Image (cartoon, rainbow, N blue to C red):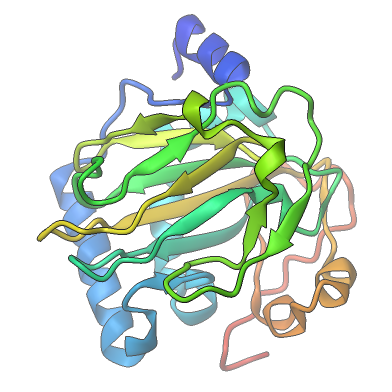
Length: 254
């Protein structure tokens, strides 16, 4: 469970690194799962946006009771997992992620998500750790983004320069097995991996079931293929909205 201090830090800063670590065996299992994914889909060597569309075994790592307990403290007892991604950042070739807010991409209404970032390797300044602007979530609004199609970017949307001050940013350095939790409105980015070591990280995206994953909005945003493939999984409680679609979709069934 998050301590009172950690929970306060999450609400105040928009992120927290809890006193929690996944076991070596769990991290090794994640690495093995990722290796099998790349054997079948080598195009995801740097980034896979929808793990569960290709291999639902990654769902096992989202069932960690410690993680779910912490997420419940933040978003409540009725929890759905709506996505999991893998940011691999191989040595010397890992992409840069521009400054953005996750909510700009996501068709969740009302917009509410707690993201869990799992360090599958040590994540530090040298290999492109996550950078965040503490407190940038507090206004609960999405700032202006523009499309950046430059080479070497993991994601295409970037915050307009006048919407944030990069000098206020801090680095979230994690050891292998540590996790961080962050808010859907938090401004964040990461630099390329210029080191000789990989920087693999897996994300788990949880939302309260008072919100609805709107596939119609995702299609309007140009994500029709993802709307067909993405599955929601009820992890705890019930679907309070009564509107979420929990049918399992994979590449084989979409």
